[in-house]
Length: 315
Ligand SMILES: Nc1ncnc2c1ncn2[C@@H]1O[C@H](COP(=O)(O)OP(=O)(O)OP(=O)(O)O)[C@@H](O)[C@H]1O
Ligand SMILES: [Mg+2]
Image (cartoon, rainbow, N blue to C red; front, side, top):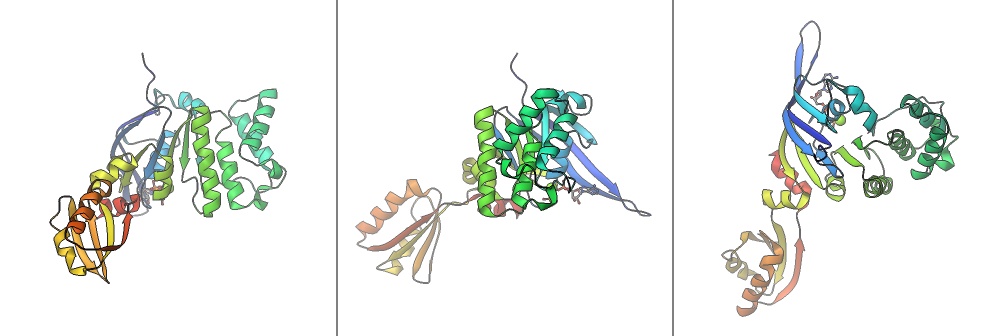
């Protein structure tokens, strides 16, 4: 028998009930289905209120679903939460720890709570301080740490039980770009060096594009699309932008009819075309202009990023 997937969820639903005297029902997940194979980095990308934290909290056994099923490493999150907790951990970019405790103390407490004892615990805490480059701050009270150090500590805390599945809720939220880059590198290294499966949520397209093998777009509690960054870009057909400066600007009319050219317009002295695939169409485009005797003074190609895909999907 092969290994079960890291995560298997089927038709997951969750609503929140709040308010008094008039009760409000706020749906957070409206039937979400997907699975995550072991050993991958999987990103849930979505705007505020999409349901990301709700979904991850159910998988980390912190919340119960209303309907549907969720299995983590082969165990049902409702029926076998303890089995799930032993092998999973979650870290939030918005984590908070007691202000007066130091990183070493915080890691020690969470390792104790995870049932790690004696010498193994001491060795593991020290290894985590090294892994996340916290050693120089091991004795500094939590309240005096910078946001980047707090985030690294939150990540270290989620590794105390050496989880097979690491769940990260917005691991780089609110960080400077250079600090984010380091945290992303540490996340990528965990998968590479330990084979840890990583399920992360983010609303940064760049983060999903850089880190993840697979991405799902979540909005209003529903999955709008799923795939790797390239296949999503291809499927949503946002196209590549080709921007040209031509000796004869009127020549742009001729380009419109070429195969693979989705749109073309002349703007501020430049000819702006959208083609389905620049690598495939550029040779034809240039040959056509050359044969027509139109000189090309400048040429720029920009590939769409996930942002364009996301805007397209959110329409
Ligand atoms: N404890 C709660 N009580 C009531 N409503 C809630 C609660 N938690 C979440 N919600 C609602 O459920 C929906 C999904 O929220 P969730 O926090 O999962 O979204 P998110 O994708 O994590 O958003 P963000 O990017 O802002 O973190 C939202 O409409 C939110 O208002
Ligand atoms: Mg959230």
